[in-house]
Length: 119
Image 1 (cartoon, rainbow, N blue to C red):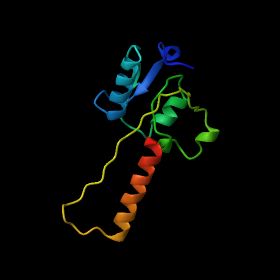
Image 2: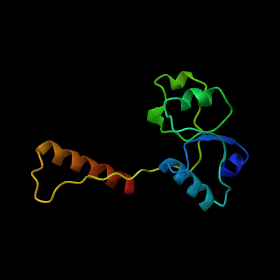
Image 3: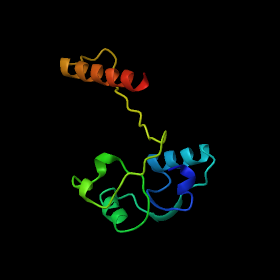
């Protein structure tokens, strides 16, 4: 499946100020595709899976926000090669502040994961 295949689909998405929506709009524009045809706009992540399952709309939702039984639901992931949202994260602390061994281990883990992802 390609982005062009989704051109005429209806979408249930968060409002245009939400980061994931801005990412989707930018990713479609970068691919030369029109903006999504938004049929339903909601910022209530909790209702999205049930709402989508009851319609033929598409949405953009993190896997972690799917209900635990999503494998048994009517929801399916639409695989699109190279179309993945990566969210940057950061860790901030006060200069010269004491960092506990647990915090240092957490930072080291984040750096290791970053290095694996970025290659």
